[in-house]
Amino acid sequence: MEVVLLERVEKLGQMGDVVTVKNGYARNYLLPQNKALRASKENLAVFETQRAQLEAENLKQAKEAEKVGEKLDGESVVLIRAASESQQLYGSVSTQDIAKAITAGGFTVSRKQIILDKVLKTLGLHDIKVRLHPEVIVSVTVNIARSNEEAAIQARGESVEEVAEAKLDEREEAVVNVFESTADVDVEELEQVAAGEIDPSELDAEPEEKKDDA
Image (cartoon, rainbow, N blue to C red):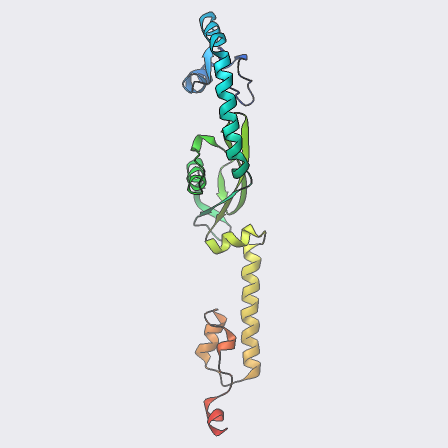
């Protein structure tokens, strides 16, 4: 089917271009979304009479989108999701999820404006595109994590696993230091140190009997 485009359509053409597309694509997307008209003599004549107005409206909308894009481009949104130890999500992140997160951050967008090249099913940072206008596309980072703490670690460019291992090593080292300094510390307290529930500095390394004698 031949259609005349009423706005720029990515990978297809600019406003006013007459292009040939599959019938289903035209009927299910271009025509109902008012992005094109059938390229009949009558419609082409109507388009030419409205062309100046359409171009003016398009220019106005593009400028408004550019203002929003200057603020939104490079922004990051956090999505908290449950995931396995292998970082695979129990489910996936949809365009609707991303649109809601961006809107919650003060930018009104719809799921149809979110461009996803692949399904997001893993933890981590994902760069996605947002089409604010046919001529204005910006980038947003989607930070998918199991908690806000993990999201902050990922935002710093660090590995969640490495940070967790470092904390574990610190706790183990703290326990060893406590054992070396005294044999009189309560076993339950040592277990709390190992679990990260209390700080080693809070332990009373000197037995109460010795304090009393002093």
